[in-house]
Length: 607
Image (cartoon, rainbow, N blue to C red; front, side, top):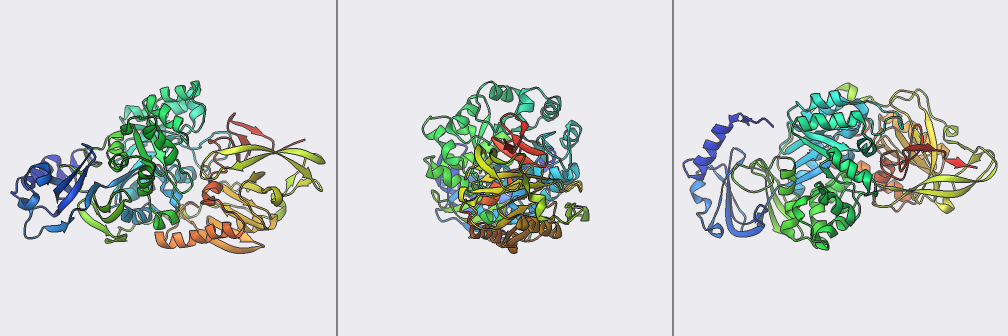
C-alpha cells in the first residue's frame, strides 16, 4: 500500500476531506446510524453510535453513547444511510495467516467466498504456487490481490523448497528473490519460516532471508512445528520469527507468547486448534492482546457453506473468550502485528470503512458487510461484481508425466520373505502432525499388500514437475478405506507432487492418469470407476471457476472419501499433508520416507 497516495489522493488531501466531513462542511458517502459500536481499541460496547464514511474511509464516529453529536451533520442529499437499529457494528475481520491455494480457488474467487462471512482483510502466503512456479507465481498472486475490493496483503514465501534435499521442488527461491519481493507494493512480510531446524542450526540461507525482511522493516512469519519447547525452540525464536500458528497445545501458545511471539490460534477445515489454544487465555490468564486468529488452510466447501475467520471467532467465544476479546483477536491484534492499524482493525477515523453489521454477537450473525465504504454483502449474498483477472497459459500447464502409469508402478517390493516391520504414517484427525507407527506386515510373493482389516493402505508420491514420473511407495494408517479405491491429488504440500492413497494399485494408476488429463486436481476412483473429482488446472492447485461451482465439485471428492469408507473430518486436508516433510512425525516425498523428528530418510520396510 503506497505511503503517500491512497486511491488517487495524497494523505494531505485525504485528511482534509475527512476533517471536512467530520465537521459537517462536506457530506459523507455512507452513514450507519444507531448501532452498538464494538470498540476493540477500548474494549467497550457503546450504544447509540453512528459511523460516517467518505471516499472509503471513516471520517466520524459519534452519537449519544459517546457523549457527542450523532452523524446527522454529515448527511447530505446523496448520502447512503443504513439504519443499524441497535445492531452491533464490528470492524471487518482479518485472517492473520492463510493460503489461498488451499481453498482450490484463485484470489478473486476466494474473496467472493469469504466477503459474505465478514472477511475484509487477509494476510496470504502464496507458498503453494511458489513451489510450482517460483517468483513468477508469487507475482501473479500479488497482482491479483491488488485489484480486490478488500485488503489482501501478501507474504513472500520463505522456504521454497520447504526441505532442501528431502524432496524434488518445482521451483526454488532464496535471499535474492526475497530481497526483490520486499520492494514490491503489497508485500507485507516473509511467509512462515518452516525450516525451523535451519534457523536454530544457523543455516545461512534462512538467516539471510530473515535479514532481508528485517532490513525492509517487515514481519517475519513463523512455523515451529515441533512439540520440543527446549533449546531448539528458544534458538528458533532468537532467529527472528514473530508469530506462529503451529502450536496445538495450551503450553505451545503460552510459550510462544512468553518469548515475545504472537500465538496464532488456527481454525481451518482440518486443523482445529482454537479450543486448545484458548485455554492459555481462559485458564492461564495470559494477555489476549498477544493472540491472533487465523485459518491457515480452508477447503472451498468450508468457505462457501460454513465460513472463514468468523468460524475461528465463534470457536473462541464458545470456548470461553469474551466476544469483544475474540473479535479483537481477529481485528486490532492482527492489524497491529502487521503494522497496518492506521488502515484497518478498528472502527475509528482515518481507517478504512470496513464495518460488519451483526444482529447476534455471541453467534456472530452477520447481516451486512461494508468494505472500503461500500455495502458489498447482505445476509450472505454478494452485492458487487469482482474484477476479472486472467492467468497466462503457462500457469495452466504444470503436470508433466512422460508415460501412463500402470498398476505395477505402485507395487511395494519386499526386501525379504516373511514377517517384517513397516514404518507407517499414522494420520491424526483434525491435526497437521502425524504419528510414526511401527507395524508388523507379511511379504507375499515378494511384495507388501494393503491390509484393510488393520487400516493399512498404500500412499505414493509421483514426481510431476520435471517429467521423471519417479514413484515412491509407502504405507499409511487412519483413512479407514474398506474397499478397492484410490484418491489422488496434485495438492500435496509443499512440493505439490502427485500424492495418491489407496487399496488398489489399478485404481491408483487410473487416478494418477486421470489427474494428468485434467491438468491437476483431486480425484476419487472406486473399483476402477471415477466417483468424484475437481479439476484444478492453475498450477495443479486452483480452479478457474467460481467458488460455488468449485465447492460443488470438491464436495464430490469428500463424498468419494466417505463412499470408500473414510469417516475423517476433511480427509483431503490430511491427504494433502502426507508429503509435507517439515511437520513431524513421518512423511513421504518423491525421494523417500522421511522421519521429520530427525530430518532423515528411513526405509519403509525393515527385516
